[in-house]
Length: 118
Image 1 (cartoon, rainbow, N blue to C red):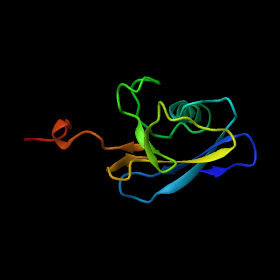
Image 2 (cartoon, helix red, strand yellow):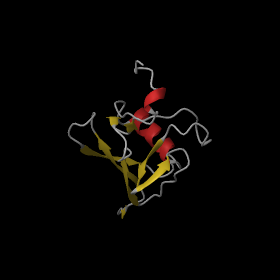
Image 3 (cartoon, one colour):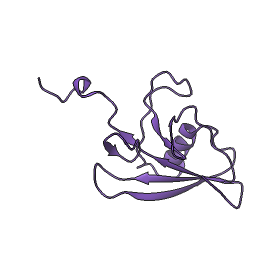
Image 4 (cartoon, rainbow, N blue to C red):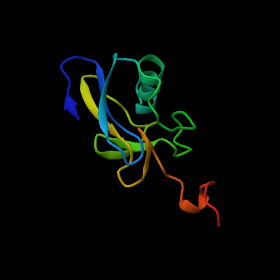
């Protein structure tokens, strides 16, 4: 997390597919566009980049546990993590889980995945 020169909310998002190359995409959100990280990611997808992949099920309830990711170096639930204007935030998929795409990590235990034959 670094200071930004204006009152924009800046998200530096680590993007990629599977084990492939990772790139960082910078998104600038106007102050007041979103309070939670999840709201900010939804705003980005609606207004700036509809290809950004992230997972969520509920909104701001912390009930589903689907929106786990890394935010400024800490594992958080995006629905309750708060962004600050004038700050550049770093957003990444979970580092200890396989990345599916962008901020989507494989979070289901192996035996719970539907694609596993036993």
